[in-house]
Amino acid sequence: MEKLRLGVVGVGSVVREIYQYLYYRSDYSHLLDVVAVADPNDQFRNWFCDTFNIPAERRFKDYGEMFAKVELDAAQINTPDHIHAAPAIAALEAGLDVLVPKPTAATIKDAHAMLQAAKRTGKLLGIDFHKREDPRIKEAEARYQSGRYGRFQSGVWFMLDKLLVADPNHVPMFFATPNFAERNTPISFLTVHMCDALIKIVDLRPVEVRSVGFSHKLPSLSPIAVKGFDLCDTEIIFANGAIAHIITGWHVPNTAHALTVQSSRMICSEAVFDLGIDTPGLHELHPDGIFEINPLFRNFEKDGTVTGYGISSPGRIYQKFIANHNGHLTDEVRQQMMNPTTLGFYTSLVLQGAEESLAQGKPIADGVTRGVPIDLKELLRRELGPEALSEYGY
Ligand SMILES: NC(=O)c1ccc[n+]([C@@H]2O[C@H](COP(=O)([O-])OP(=O)(O)OC[C@H]3O[C@@H](n4cnc5c(N)ncnc54)[C@H](O)[C@@H]3O)[C@@H](O)[C@H]2O)c1
Image 1: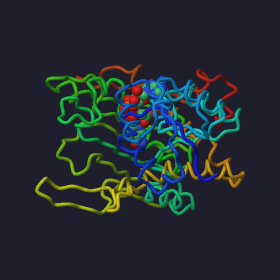
Image 2 (image 1 turned 90 degrees about the vertical axis):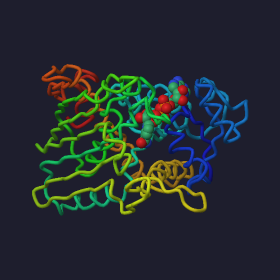
Image 3 (image 1 turned 135 degrees about the vertical axis):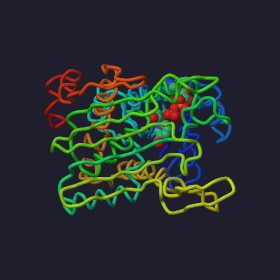
Image 4 (image 1 turned 135 degrees about the horizontal axis):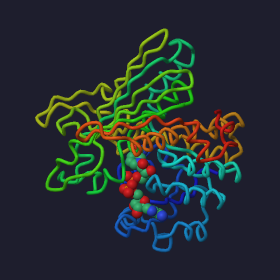
């Protein structure tokens, strides 16, 4: 097999910003044939299908109908986080390999059900955490895991979006609908990226989480005020006692040098290392302002090809799906793909823990909520039962 017959479930913002290029303008496009689309939103479904010539009989409102009627090899599930599990499990049960954008799911119950379905069906599941393919993260991972840095002790990670990401008053509208910041928190949208990258580098299990949330800027917006957190500082304690703060938000001034201001400093027993993720090297002084361009993430090349780790991250997962269909996927690679860390389980655990921390938290000052500490082993026991503890290494 050279091409996967792909069914796409959900064609909203992430398809507009990233995946349309993967499907049609990337070095991986020759591996993918988008043969059918399911999305109940008429506007989004028609935009995608009209643009890319998907015929009327292969446009669906209901993904179940698509899986029943169209011959597919794989499915990509681009629905909101809380709607990943049902279509992903339905696709696995229909005999398809499945790719899902980060995070695996909003809850560990959903993530666990997806992992179980992959195990039960023997099909492949891949989660697109694109930072895993950022060459700086990969280099840090290889160096950390060689022992060069010693033990991870303490680290700070930042991921701060420009206000326009969360501001429904911004013209033209970006991602934000009026309830965007109520439906998404900086934790579900941003912390998961950094948490996954950090876990990939240090390969440690998180054991406790506590968040502090600030709600100052969003409620002050006008004419549409927004409920929700501007900034969250999530403290994660790992099994070796190391501690990380992942600080995420979306109210950096729109004049910022990058859409997302992001970096980290990691302190280990033998070294300190920094990741300047928003300073990838192309620095512009221009009448429009001063900008850091990140072609490492997404690079529109002169010939129309789109490259970068935003594209190669899902692209390399699809290469593995094809290798599997052709009988070339080694057991070692399969096991590596299907372990709970690669499948983003611990990141979903941190996500659920951090959101519970804030939900149970108390106001400590105007607009500031201090969350309670959440013991992740107890959370796991409560949600999945005691038998899940050893399965996930607790
Ligand atoms: N890789 C990244 O950096 C990145 C960036 C943005 C979003 N995401 C992730 O991508 C996913 C989608 O986010 P988005 O911003 O595109 O959301 P969105 O709301 O813009 O789009 C979601 C789409 O799913 C459709 N949908 C909802 N229920 C459905 C169902 N039952 N069957 C089929 N389609 C259904 C909606 O109609 C909509 O078109 C989320 O998990 C999000 O966290 C990843």
